[in-house]
Length: 61
Image (cartoon, rainbow, N blue to C red; front, side):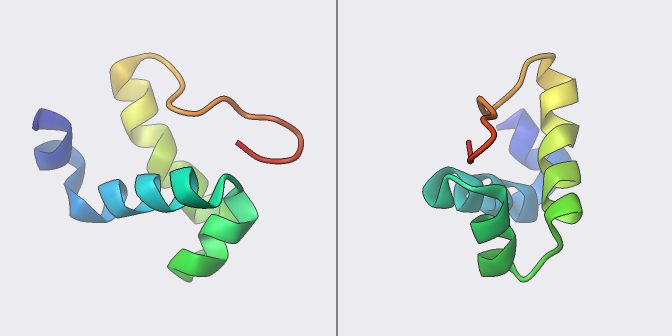
């Protein structure tokens, strides 16, 4: 709950978009954002938690 309060609903939506799409590119298209923008939005909670939220592969997450 604290993460949601700190980062907001938009970050949670972006997280779910990446999780469902299993690809940064597809998620960014669905969210109408640049890949770098969605990546930065996911990087914020990752730095707070201190661990990656996704396992990154060359062909997706």
